[in-house]
Image: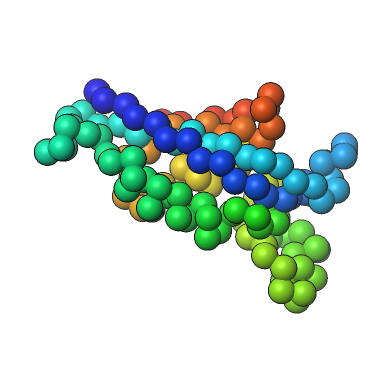
Length: 134
């Protein structure tokens, strides 16, 4: 089995509904994701995938949907206000924790037909969440 990974970094804001600590307030992060792919055999060019193709697919998706956006739960009462002001927001069904963002990136890569098997997402340099294919 062959594995390759590509790293992506982006800035985003969020807040966590129901959180008892300071993360209940809007704040920002410099997120970093490592997306790992796997294939049993290499393609005709001797690759799992061309890294440039990853930048053009999942990298583009991150840039268009998450980078410099406020990522909020669809249930967040702040969401309609920010949308009405024309602010860049991205709504997800769950609380936008590091864990749910790792899964969001996994699912987005899969939707782009990328053979993703693992996403590691760092909310801060010291805090990481992982989502893997079962």
